[in-house]
Image (cartoon, rainbow, N blue to C red; front, top):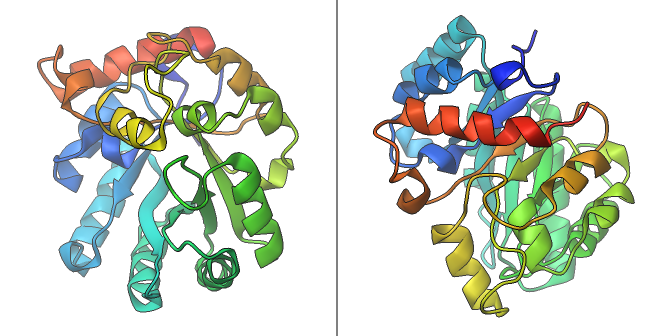
Length: 270
């Protein structure tokens, strides 16, 4: 059973995304996430860095701390397909007991993107996972509409779409666009904040902002409450706060994550 939402907020599974604690060893992340009151965690997996003993230890520690593993990232759709690496990442995700594997498309061709995503979704489905395709304004799958179309065209039931609040805004999307997506396509979303209007609207600037300038939820101008209200009931939220700048005011990971939890509380709806 998922733990209660942080700080007495209404019940909704809250997670800490893999890149929020970038640079911390996997086992060191678990206690701060649990101590801050989150119910789930994500991990970035490079297969060579995840031997079987680490997989077993991470799964056991998360279980001991009452944490679900919401996702593993990232499987990549590449110009030169590497489905062997994709299969290794998905295999590790399955052994961890993960719910989702995050997929990023780098291939410029739509037909090849659909083909590779279909194969990735099939592997994920066989492992009991969802394959969540994340759109980004600086990638070939740039918008929510692009991602939904790829998943639709791939036609595999394990296929899904991952909405990130930053990418939704910077690709021209609105919360009402998310409301129109079939609920079954939205296994979870990623949440952060940035100013409502970008200083530079180019994709290159969006990439820099996504990497270096995210803010705690509520500290920017995105319509996060409206986005959360547009989600299917119970859709998990994963806080993705990338880069050292957002963590700099806090002395350690636990104090940072507690601040993230407090920032989410006013936004959460049942």
